[in-house]
Length: 289
Image (cartoon, rainbow, N blue to C red; front, side, top):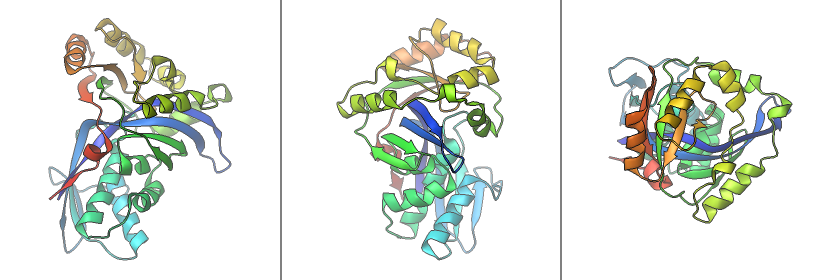
C-alpha cells in the first residue's frame, strides 16, 4: 500500500499573538504541491520504520510518532513496516516531516480498516505536530489556532511554483523563528481572510495578500536569502515569497513553461531549484494498493 506525502507552501502566514499555552495563534492559507515524499506500508509481525535504503528511523521521527499516536488513539497495536523515500528538503519550510506523519495515519487507517474519518485522523495528527492536521486533508485550507483548526477551501486555481532551497538549515529552525518574533510582527489576520475569500471565489490570490510573518526574522537569520531572492527576480520571477518559516523561497507562474524558464535562468549558488505545481485535496491524499 502506498501514498504520497506532498510538500506545502503558505500563500499567507500571519501570527495574531502568543497564547497562554506558549504557542502562537496563527492564521494561514496553506496549499499542497506535487513535490512529494513517498511512503509504503505492509503488515508486519513487529513495527519497522525505515528509509528507502533500509536505514532505521529514529524514535523521535514524526513517522514513528504518528504511528504510535494512532495506536494510542485506537487502543491497540498496529504493527507495520513503513518505508519512506525522501524528496522534500528537510527543515526548509515545506512541511515534509508533518506530511510524512499524515501519510502514516492514512496508510494505517486503510491497512487496518480502522474507518476513521479525516476529522478523527486530524485530531490524532494535531498531537504529533501543528501542521499534521492540514496534511490529513491536503489541498487548500484556511488554518487557524496553533495549526489544528482547519477550514477546507475549494482547490485553488492550478499554479506552478519555482522553489529554491538553501543548502543548510538548522533542524530547530522553526522554534528559533517563532522565538525571533516580536509584537511588531503580529497582525490581525485580515490578509489571510481576504486571501481565503479569493480562493472561495475561484480567484488567484493577489500578491498584496501574500504576507508571511517570518520574512523579517528569516532574512535576518539567513543573510544569504537576499542573494537567492534576487536570483529568482533576475531569472524572471515577478515576486518572491518565503516558504513557511523558511529558509525555502518560491515564486509562482501561471504555466509550466514559465516556471521552467525561471528555473533554468536561476543561479542557485548551491541551493536546490525545484519546479512544482499545486495539487488539490483528492490528489494530495490518495492511497493506492
